[in-house]
Length: 123
Image: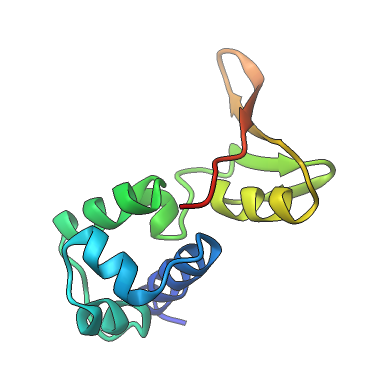
């Protein structure tokens, strides 16, 4: 799968996890529904400004929107289950009735740091 197709799949996954239709997300991000559909299908490369707008509306980082992690030293966890993105961890947490997700980050200077964050409400 090409990077643009992975991005499209991640965009669709995030949109659906927040119970948004393509029309709703398009309006909130100031895009046309047809353009958004092409992004989800991996048929169009978005501009950086488009990525930033989508990330703000979906309340995720651009890195998370791209389905990438900056490093394997950061992960999200709910119970014993690990996830690469906050959105995936929150989706699992909501399905299992959890109120918090844990963000882990491994650094050379401080070792392993854990931060508990509340599960965000769906829009």
